[in-house]
Image 1 (cartoon, rainbow, N blue to C red):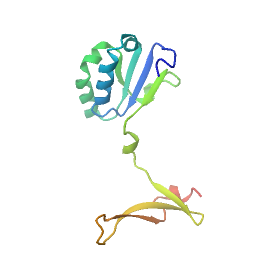
Image 2: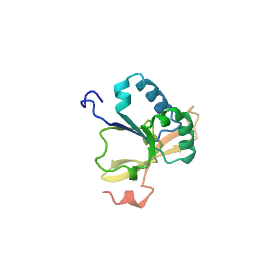
Image 3: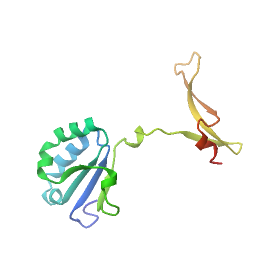
Image 4: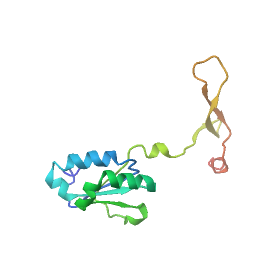
Length: 139
């Protein structure tokens, strides 16, 4: 992406929800072997969990010394200030969601329920009225 964009300096990678910092460590180790890209790179980690920030900082301490790696909140990142890429791995998977369908022109929610049967899988999807009032007002 850095090459496609014309090799901008700085090129910012914003990783949201970096977990233990494993992707950051792997990526930064790889990029270190590409000196021009490594010199252009600004790596920003957005992480809310204090314990994970501590783990990331310990794992990535050699890159912190490099000076192009830091932690930030989304609020601290100015609008239109990123030339680069924002990414995450499995962050969205951690968000609570509600699955819905429209049946007979009515919004219905899909739940997971336990069925008592001889099946090896006791879980089943059930379609019923929405569980929360905000969903009720959508249609």
